[in-house]
Every structure is written in structure tokens, then in C-alpha cells.
Length: 159
Image 1 (tube, rainbow, N blue to C red):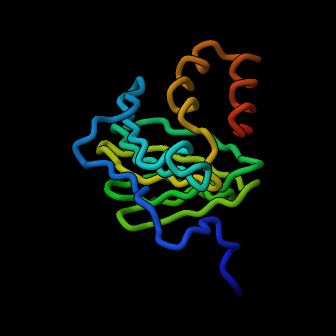
Image 2 (image 1 turned 90 degrees about the vertical axis):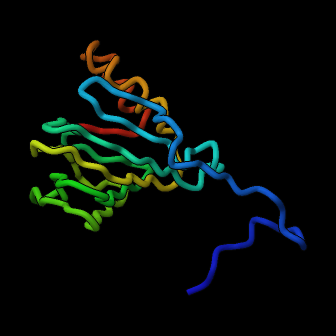
């Protein structure tokens, strides 16, 4: 087992860290009350990963069963109870629970409870998911072929 090849070849390091304060307003507020914070976007990590904090209201529908061809997706439950589909069965994720889904892995999530839920979503490598979060509700309203093309453009293949 070895480390990846170096990508920084300088001798003294550089000032390049990115700080995001906890009081930063959300980046997306979706219909139904889901709030998304771009903690580390594709742009800020130069495509290494994308990390998002997602707060879902009670009974929020989440995403139906789908898979990704190019990216993995991981879920870490911060608070509440999140229903997660791991490709075989639905499980209830609670604070501290984690689900990793490799490329091609079937998965889904939703909040069935009467309480809010908060989670971290990690995508690797860092695909430009921001447009997906910002416009999925709009395309869902359009439906049909426009929705399907939007989903495929964002590496999301729904069953």
C-alpha cells in the first residue's frame, strides 16, 4: 500500500486553505424545506471531492433508487433518522451512522420521520454537483425527457 503520486512539488508549502464558517448561509433552499450547504465544492477542491451538509425537513422525500457511473456517494448522519437504501434493503441511519456507495451501487434516501434530519454527503471524485442541487426541482417539474437528460448529465441513473 502506498500514497498517491505527489501533486504539490514545491518545497515550502503555500497558503491555500479554504475556511467556511458555521454561520455561512445555505447555498440552496429547495422546495419542501431541504437546505444544502456547499462545504467543499468541486471548484474549491479542484475536483478531488465534494462535501455537502444537507438538512431535510420532516417527511422530506429525498432521492429515489439510482446509481452513479463515475462517482461514489457517502452519507454520514449528523442528527435525526435518515432512511437509507443500500441496494438490498432500507435501513435507518442515526447519528454517527455511515453509508458508502461505490460507483454503480444502487441507493436511495428519504426522511420518513416527523423530525428533521441532518447529514453530510460526500462525492468522490468531486463532480460539479452544485447545478444538480440548484436545478433538480425545476427539472423535476418539467419531467419527461428533459428531466432524464438533466439526470444523465449529472451522472444520476434512476430506476
